[in-house]
Length: 354
Image 1: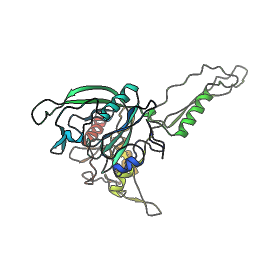
Image 2 (image 1 turned 30 degrees about the horizontal axis):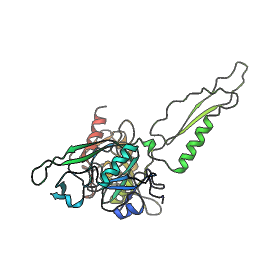
Image 3 (image 1 turned 90 degrees about the vertical axis):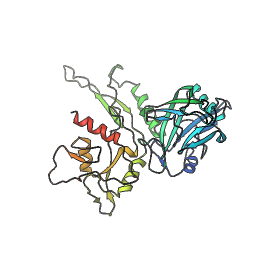
Image 4 (image 1 turned 135 degrees about the horizontal axis):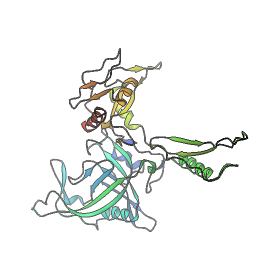
């Protein structure tokens, strides 16, 4: 496993899941098993933040996947809980080591790893574990007034941070992919013999893992063929498949829509993880358990093309027939699989509006 540093940890892609905080620390994603802000020493000897954990934090926190509003840290003696939600006895300080480190990462433009736990926002939380969700940049900081005052009624100031998720193509592909991209870029800088160096190419689709745009010159009047010029770009959505494995494991490969359980010759079940709100443009759905269903291949396609939609009461509505295939009246749900209605509503409104 790669050493702890600013940015991506070698060998760990967004979506990787860990049973408990100790595993998160052992994999060098975070420096601590309790604190929310992880710190390390920068090149000049000062402390900077390299990661944060979202796991049932302060009431002033707000998680919207692509953007996060995060409350800073305080000594344990300054904290107490009301109905399980942390509150503060006194104002936070920018001089407190963890807050100063995260502020310094903001000033220096360092990306921060975000790890979500199961006690965070229900739209994005994993199932009883911690999940590494990629790199974010701190875009703004401020001193704000907390929603709840101190026990004596005086206002409490908090250190507040805004974070923005980096685009998928900046979520640190593996070293091998970096090498391939560099080689292709260098190759593209050298025009093929017999051609000019002004070839153009369309921008690649964000969803594509690898895309080649080929452009061939027209044949000359004498029938001579000019060499083909190729421009290649490498761009992949880098993520671990632990999210899908987690959901499929709950249902032992059984389709949540039709109940089919496919078995291979080895006796192992085959199923697919289907994102309710699709990933990438224009949907930009998150790769999280509340947005994933365990489906058979047929029902996966039916969901993707809008042939079925799911109501808020979990009823399955068939919008286009499939002979010989029945569906359940309602979606099967495991008690630990917290499917979020926001994703079902998005999928339903997207297809019903077409």
